[in-house]
Length: 493
Image 1 (tube, rainbow, N blue to C red):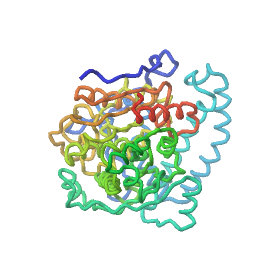
Image 2 (spheres, rainbow, N blue to C red; image 1 turned 45 degrees about the horizontal axis):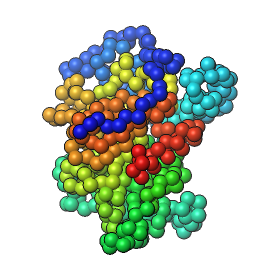
Image 3 (spheres, rainbow, N blue to C red; image 1 turned 180 degrees about the vertical axis):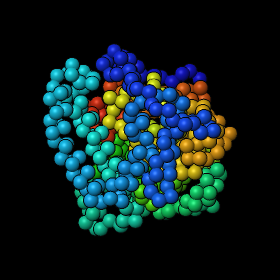
Image 4 (cartoon, helix red, strand yellow; image 1 turned 135 degrees about the vertical axis):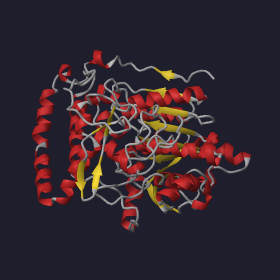
């Protein structure tokens, strides 16, 4: 099969646009190596009986953001905020009070295009990217990232507001029977102690009770009459598997809601409130494959409404993109329904939880100044999500490069894991930001998909950070991006 159509990125290399090519840090002090050949950060005690080691990879000098943002230090700070409330409260107040003067400083220091990290950026974009990174850092270190209440039953007033304000409905999906889940996922669930659970979701579009059956009559006449609105989007939000939500008010809901507005063939979207993971200083909960079981539940829910696999588009951004890939892998390799899917849409997907792309020339360093992304959040999120699973497992890290050691950072012995393959996968749209820190992961994913014959459209959005579809300051790019996604969904790209 010929290579996928690649839509050229107008970006020139980072050095020609003004972004720093690399961070020149002084060498780190000598750090001992373990028998695996990995360089370890000094073990930090983050609580009674809790010691965490974090690797930097084989670089002799790790970039400063990796040194300061590693999961051990992040967990130590989170633990301090959680166990010393008075000190933690003062820290939060001081950092929140620093935001207005910092915002004013960032505004003044970016007044002219030549002063900005990228001259093509608007003033608002240049300033708000710094602001978002600062706010996210405060929330993360203060252990203040929120997770939805998975047991919450909306009141009648809340349901009425959902309907009137967003045209949405809150639905419950009964958890898939584990006996019906195929291997290897069922075995992983048993080993991790993960059970199936009832899953909440938000439905936007045609009435949920009749959408599948009314829109997709088995008769030739009915199908022809409704063919203009014949698809549903199954959407998974981002948030490093530790935060975020599917509620229509969330930043990540921009993509599914506006896809419904601009597409000629979508009749509804289903945004899934899948289980999020957690770990110290919070209770350890929902490791892999909890979120994948919820994704399988949501797919079967759509089938129960009368939708056919070819009428379902699986979509996800960031961690949600990771989950979307895992679901499609299950449907292709285990369930047998994947090759007949309507399509897979990946927006800035997080597809390497194994840190195999780290390095002084990587996009993690190259695009650090042009993204709001926090490496400490992905370190922590990947750590609690993988738990005792190898992060190099192709179901978890489909873009992971060749292993550098025989033992994972979590202390789990590596299996003989192979690179992910993508035979018989459905048509796929992959859109990373041209200036995001996870860009190299998307490029590796493209390099894996193309030789396996995936009908792939790949577009790096020029000068965009991670998850541009979530950020208000990315207009008009994010609306243009959604229109592009919808043209692809409708078969026009």
